[in-house]
Length: 370
Image (cartoon, rainbow, N blue to C red; front, side, top):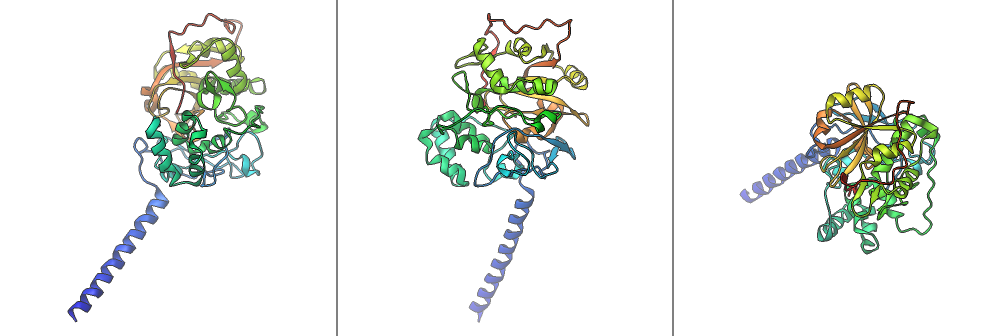
C-alpha cells in the first residue's frame, strides 16, 4: 500500500513539473529572452518575408518606423512586407528579411554584438548553427567552398542567407537599378549584400562583405538626389578607380568628402558632438559615421544617421535591417563613433573635390564587417 502511494505521489509531482515546464517554454516563445546589450529593445511586429529555416531574400528595405519604444520598432507596410528593391510587395521572393529579435534568439545570435569568427572557432560556430537551421546546415555541408569571411559574416547575420546561397553561382548578374519604392521612400535602406550589387568586386573582396563605405555614400545620394543618385556599384567602382580603397586595409576617409562630389553631394567632416549631429539632422542633412567595434561591427564599419523621429536618430546600417529598424539616442552610439561627415546638395559656395588622385592613407580603417 505504501509503495502504491509513493507511485501516485511521484506521478502527481511529475505531472506538475511538466505543466510548469510547458508554461515556461510557451512564455519564452512568445516574449523572447533578454540579450546582452538589448535590454531596452522590445520584440515587435517587424516581420516582412520573415526569416525561416528555408532561407530569406537579401535586398534593400523601405522601412516605416512607428510605436517607438526606448530605441524603437518598425511596422509592416500596407502589404505586410518591408520591401526589397527588386520586386513588388505581392512577390514574397523579393521581400527583405527584416528579422525579429526572436529570429536571432533561436540561433543564439545577438544582433547588437557582432563577433569575430576565424579558423576553428568559425567551424565550430557553423556546426552549431547547422544543428539549429536548415539553411545553415545546407551551407555548412559546402563549408570548404566558401571564403572564411563569407561564412563569418553569415554567422552574425542570418538575413544574408540568399546572398550566401548564391555566392558560388556562375550566373551572378549585377542589376543595380533602383525601384519606384526606393525612389519614393524618404530614407530607403540599402544593404551591401543585396544581390543587385553585393557580388561586385570591391578591393580584395566584394561589396557584400567590404563595401559599406560606397553603399553608405550611395544611400545618402539617394536620400538627397533621388533619381539622380548613384547606385552602390557605381560608387564602389569610382572608389576603386580613384584609389580610395587600399587592398587589405579598407577605404580612405578622404573618400567620404572627395567622393561626395562624384555622387552629387557636398560633404564635410563634423565634430564628434551631439549638438553637431542633431543640428545637421534637424536641417535635413544626413550624416555618415565611421564606427569602431561594438554594437554595429566586430571590426570596423560605416553607417548612416538618416534623420530624426520623435527626437531619436533614424539609423540606416547597410549590414543590418534589424539595427536599421530601431530608433537610437545619441548616447547609445556616441561611444561607437570614430568620425562623421554631413551631406547636402552642393551650392556655388562649395568647393567639390572629386578627382583627387593623391589620396592620403594616414586615416584609414578596416571596413570588413564580419
